[in-house]
Image (cartoon, rainbow, N blue to C red; front, side):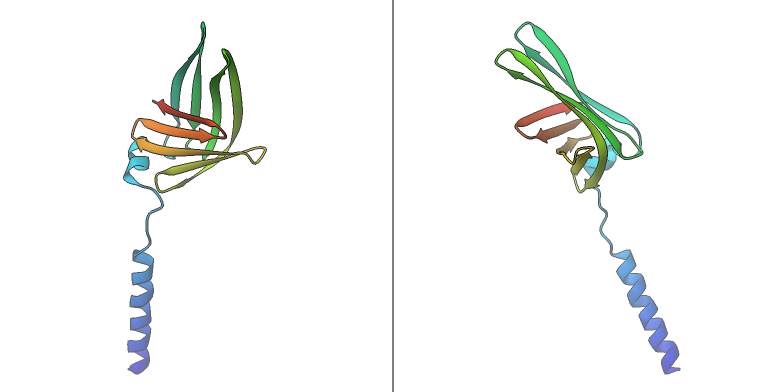
Length: 125
């Protein structure tokens, strides 16, 4: 009988440990559909008389592509890459094919803030 009670208590403890795991995403990420469907965010960048769109695409298979334009002395400069992404809380991290890191903060279901080197942009669906 003692063995049965000990085994039962161990099962309850293990079950309790498994049920208390924290989710790795926040409501902001879940509402944005990141990881559940292919999503794309854009921002129009104007530099002098030219304009281009920065964009970030996060696919449901956890792959990502990005094209980030910035204006530097009336010249549009492009940073582009692709890689895999991971979600942690309201943060998304893209690790590019050359080990570059692009950090994304999910603001709400339609808006993200992208940070890469000196580039910081807010993109929308």
